Amino acid sequence: MKLDPEFISKDHTLFTVGNDVVDTADLQVLSYAAIRGGEVPKLVSGKKPIVLQCAWTAVESEPEVYDESYLADLRTYLKELEDTGCYAVIEPMVDNALSGDEERFVAAMKHTARRIKDCKSVVGFAIPQAVQNVSMYLDELSQKHEQYVFFGHKELTKLSEFDGIVWY
Image 1 (cartoon, rainbow, N blue to C red):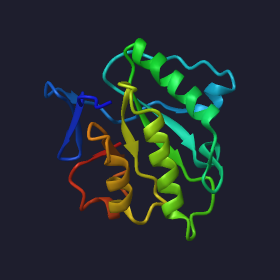
Image 2: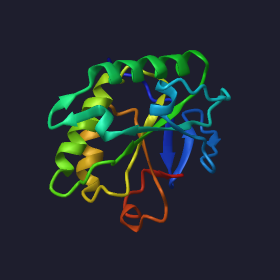
Image 3: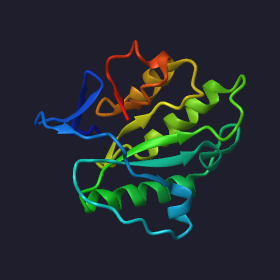
């Protein structure tokens, strides 16, 4: 299922497709683990997205073993956001050593993207600081998800060469 983009990036800034600037300063950061555990965050509908942290080890407990229950629950939550007019940036949390496993991490996040592909509430994915091969990360997560916008912290100098990344 291909979704039309609702957001675009220009000059490291997020815009609606109607060309309205979306403020990405001080985004509300929520842990999906806490939400799944029963924490009920107060959300405000509108174009300013929340940052939804998603731990690698919650998605993939061991190599190529994905927690489909976790991913189904994540999709359900994102659909609930969609129903309330809220948006989210998925921020993968590298809570496992990446040494030699960066491709595995990227594959797990690509698997996550496939499981939430029909969620209009997902603006895109953040680029974790631990990811060294940013081009691979962007290429893999963009496959079949052209609507995604990618986000990064501007202090990560390795991201400055990528024009399409939104600073947050």
